[in-house]
Picture 1 (cartoon, rainbow, N blue to C red):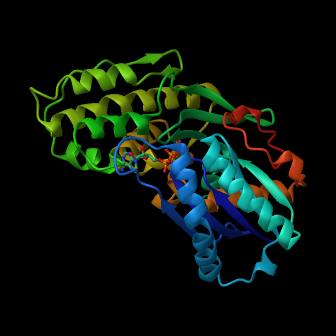
Picture 2 (picture 1 turned 180 degrees about the vertical axis):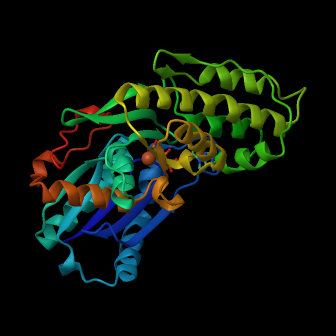
Length: 325
Ligand code: ATP
Ligand code: FE2
């Protein structure tokens, strides 16, 4: 069985092709980067509509398959930006109808988790999902992926990108902050904001920016990472302790950060647990994770009618019926 997945929840447009063994036959991504400021949803959607067909063509060539060999078409149904989601959904519908193959709408957040389970021999991990728009600690219980803790305001990646914008770093700022932080040697006090199982970032962002005049950017970057990553690790560890889980999986663009990986690894080893993190392109937004989740769903009998393929900008992780587990 071969599934083609389309990802278009935000600034990235991706097409991935996977088989039943979770082998990635192709995973092509193109990113819309606004010349300045944040993403304008309509402009990003126009970009996806312009470039999408070429990305699809390239993915098909890389996979070395013909259109007839595709068994299922999957797309990210939400959460995300409406116009961007609709562009991907429209392509998926067109493909499904012309190829006469089933279509499956996938939850983007759940796909970030499933690609990790597909790549590794991990059964029932707690997922720390850290991306631009999302920050959640997720685990499976009673047929659903439950959110055990999440950000109360902005996603950690958006926080890093906003910090970077004020500091004149290129977008996205996460990798630059990581590099700067390596040269930081002084820890500057920042508010530590864990509330129950939830976390908040906007106060820390304000406090970090206020240090701009008096401190080195390297030290602020270092302190920003140490503080926010410690918060993430604390909540993740508590979810693992509560559930008695000995596996932790990272996903989302921020999961590429080596310092975050190191901190989670230390926490995991202290609990005799194992840490898993997919390779970079499978952490950030990509079509392969959508394809893999779509394949799992279709194997479990899910095929959506076109009338069920409306996008859902606020599609919640815990709204998904996880029929494939
Ligand atoms: P989602 O729709 O799931 O919220 P997204 O659209 O934000 O995803 P991702 O590719 O998952 O897309 O994540 C992008 C984020 O990852 C950006 O905010 C970027 O700054 C951050 N990021 C990328 N590399 C690193 C890194 N090495 N360290 C920290 N953050 C990083
Ligand atoms: Fe994502």
